[in-house]
Image 1 (cartoon, rainbow, N blue to C red):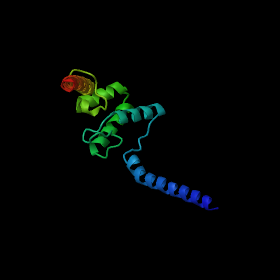
Image 2 (cartoon, one colour):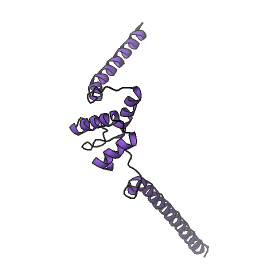
Image 3 (tube, rainbow, N blue to C red):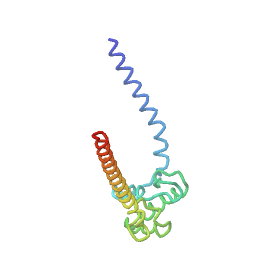
Image 4 (cartoon, rainbow, N blue to C red):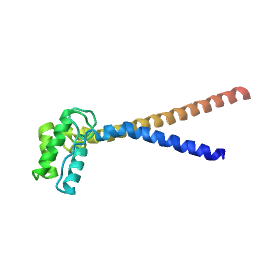
Length: 163
């Protein structure tokens, strides 16, 4: 009987925690979603995909759906307008990049201006691997030198003891 009450208590506590999380997160998640009317579900899906791809120019690391900034609301409105005017996804992205630069994209294109961004982490990883290799090789050589010195010391000790 006591085990049953413990389970009920744990389930009730878990339900309260989930409800508290939902109450705190739900207003933030849905606060920025405007009630746009779409003619079909394809336009709605394209809008949602574009809104997640585009970064708010004012905010750090937030897409235009997650951002509370007024400029993000303007961008959401622009995407909605351009979709309804018949622009393709690529044309909308080009429009946004022309207006706000590559920063507006979460995944900027690979070009000479963004090589460091795309390939810099791999270069740092390669550099770290080379440093680790050199350090390990140096430690192995130092250990070998220390072993040789101790062998030489043993020989001298044996000569002194044998006399």
